[in-house]
Image (cartoon, rainbow, N blue to C red; front, side, top):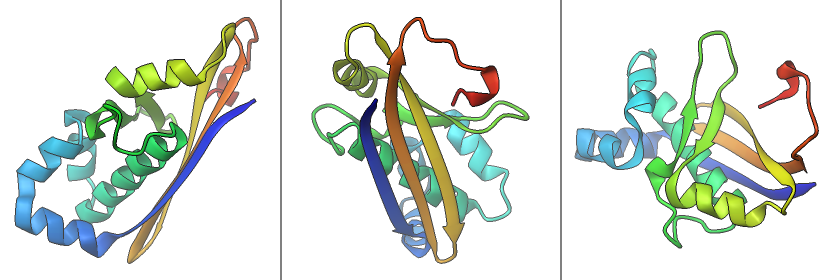
Length: 142
């Protein structure tokens, strides 16, 4: 069952400008330490930050809140385990909103797709629910 979908498209040049004007203050306001560490290792740091920014916007739309109702930037983030695809994590109010969307007896799964074609970056987020007792093969889990 689909609980929500969201999409975002951002001009990477906008993130370049924001990084030049606000630097670390912007990074700390929007991105977790884990996200910052990952983005800083990329050759094109601004594009990496733009992709992460698009994921957060798409997730907030999938949750049905946007950046309101207590849902904030650092409450949605990408976790990247070595050799695994990125996993979208919600904490705090974003996690609470996810729980409110999820029917009793079900668990939510978050799927994310990220891409860029400079000067743009895009992300889509889908939230689905499966019965709590349903088991999926490990490779199928987000």
